[in-house]
Image (tube, rainbow, N blue to C red):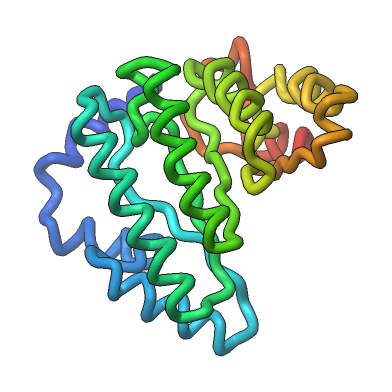
Length: 204
């Protein structure tokens, strides 16, 4: 971590809440489901599709993960009730990846089943490089039962081309797997990832 990154991380706790809210406003729909629904309605009016991601990852207690599952089912119910062109994105650490992979897969499966009942889709976001292997394992396991799930790969990681080949196996093709490519936002070691703007863009 550079001196600038350490400075930013170290000063965040003392930054006034109003300043944080002003910066985050562009990226956060709001603090409640109603806020997100309002933004989705406005996006729909402009012909855009939306995806909802609840903040609250890196959960290490089962009850918190289960609470996140309950919140996502509320989101799916609301999307269905309002007939919005929208789906959800999830981070596996919000579903208890740090509690255990089997537990996390169980929580994810609950959400996938609920989404499938509504004819909806769930995208598994990719987190930092320490979570990549577990995320892909859980995605591949989920694909055995659900066809309404996709995953994200990050172009900035050196390993991503190999991961694409892994996901392009015969089983993936037969099952109609779904992957989205993003540039990647996490601060990663330069030994395993492109770290400059131009290199990340070229990798993408």
